[in-house]
Amino acid sequence: MIRARLGTSVFGRDDDTLASVVGRRLCELGATLSTAESCTGGLIGTQLTDLPGSSAYYLGGAVTYCDEAKTKLLGVPREVLDTHGAVSEPVARAMAEGARNVFETDYAVSVTGIAGPGGGSDEKPVGLVYIGLAAVGEASARRFRFGADAPRAIIRERAVLSALSLLRAALA
Image 1 (cartoon, rainbow, N blue to C red):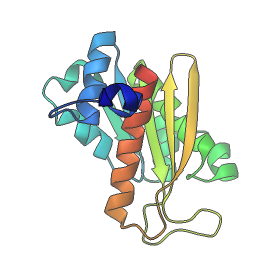
Image 2: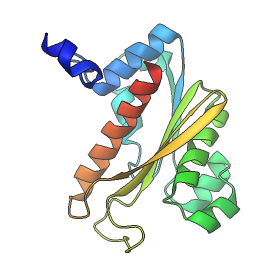
Image 3: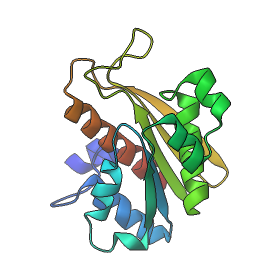
Image 4: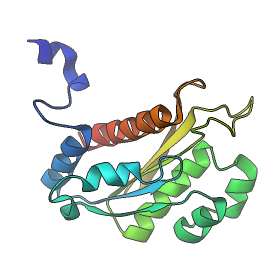
């Protein structure tokens, strides 16, 4: 009864985590995943690889903290970075597309943002995060605000959970 009322807000039961639900769904689909992370520094990859059997669906990731790494490793066009900045929707989308291409996966998720406590501005405050998602023939990115006053670890944790949640919805 409660599960029916909550619908897709319920993602698992008992010891399920977002990462385990995503992994199970990828296995059911026979699909693969890669990641491109900036402000999360590999935390998505960590959550995925903490699970036994994750090598069946998780092929790898790139932590591209600086602009040069985004360009060299993921193929993010320099002009996109120069025009929009590293923390932007076009860069998040390009990062996801780049990871999908580099690792030759069915899906890729990316994260770029400002985890703080410094580095923010009026235009791009601390807590601003863009999450990209790429699949065959399509890529998108969403903007999130995780709180300018939130601690760095909390912003990063919220970014990881949001990325996995977006991916779970795309796999439904």
